[in-house]
Length: 251
Ligand code: NAP
Image (cartoon, rainbow, N blue to C red; front, top):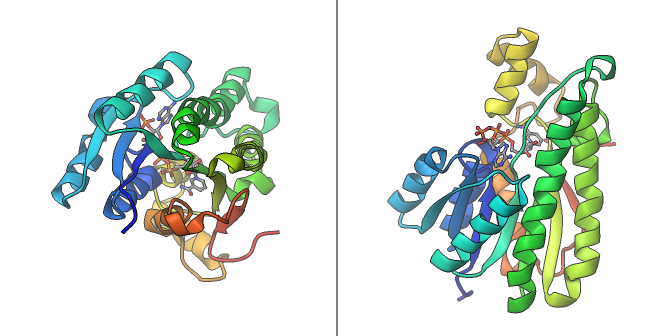
């Protein structure tokens, strides 16, 4: 029987993060459910507890260092040393480059990259001490380039380099780092993109599905299943990888 672990999932109030938090709890982890507002974590925490798991709601902005330190400290104190980290919190501020503001560039890079950096720096202390850890970072197929997303695609490509470097630096401490790069996943994020471009969400999904080899869009649980494997004991020889969860191959 594997020892029980403590995990932190960022952006876990909804969407992919909520599915990952629930899946890791089902796998036996106690889960720090972290999102911008502690109150918004209630549903995920309640669902985990209703299924017999252990979860703690934590409010923090992942791009603010002292909030990150307080959040990781709270999880360590109340649940135990966090040795699984899923950097999932994310935002979109799409625009073509000629219309993109500096604020929208900074905001997106700040949440995805600075957020993952701060969370990883804070949590690796516990992982290296325990001589065991799993870091899973959310990249995206947009890392390969996507019109209207210079900020987001730069952040998601950055996540891949960040992941590989974490794998190199932390491997000797028993810590692995891997990235998941999803394609189209049905969440509020993709719903908001449909709303922004003025297309009905069902039509938007149908259009996306037609271009995906498996002929459907992804669900948060598709990503959670891969996160579950990467966070598991048996994935200890898989590190520095980017796994596309996109219903088909990527260039
Ligand atoms: P989502 O439904 O928009 O959920 C993102 C969550 O992150 C929200 O609960 C949000 O909180 C939280 N968050 C935003 N900024 C934060 C911050 N500074 N600190 C803490 N939490 C913050 O998004 P999703 O679709 O589940 O996406 C999850 C991750 O997967 C993101 O990194 C995204 O880029 C990536 N991804 C998604 C897709 C897709 O098709 N959906 C594809 C590829 C990659 P608020 O609600 O309070 O803003």
